[in-house]
Image 1 (cartoon, one colour):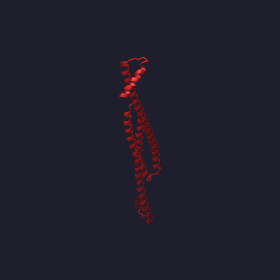
Image 2 (image 1 turned 90 degrees about the horizontal axis):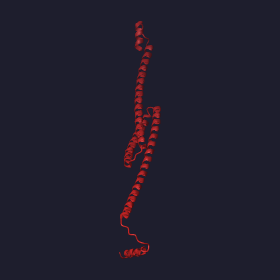
Image 3 (image 1 turned 45 degrees about the horizontal axis):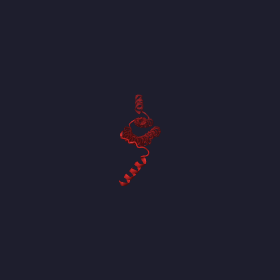
Image 4 (image 1 turned 45 degrees about the vertical axis):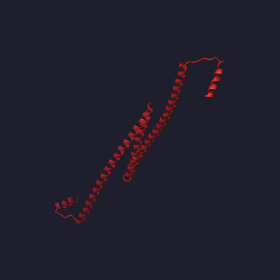
Length: 201
């Protein structure tokens, strides 16, 4: 701009007053400074936008993982062994999500120094994500308790089944064995004979 003014005055064959020349130089420097500040702000804004997108992607990834775990936890199964194995795997996935969530929260805390309003928005989103995480943990604990209860019931059932099968086996032996019928008058004598045998042996 200062050069344009000088060229204008040179074109008129006059000399640019020194005061005006000094002011134009100051304005030129101020414009350069403002332009540098604008470029710096643009870079900062772009960095913040990029970070915001990265945070958004991480939040979405964790939310997707938690929702997948939650839906798997709600599925019913008939195989307790398989369910226990799945429960263990889902527990590990849930722990992994917890670590990612803590790392994300720490990153947002660091980011808060750069952009407080955006950090508050991200903190709100992380708060919702934390609530989903807590819900998933409660569902995992509920399922673990139900699996434990089912395993206990199955063990009781198996013990009862074993007892019944032994009882049936003994009943079959009695049914297929030879039965000697005695009259009621012979029973006391038979009893005394049995008692004597027990005492002798």
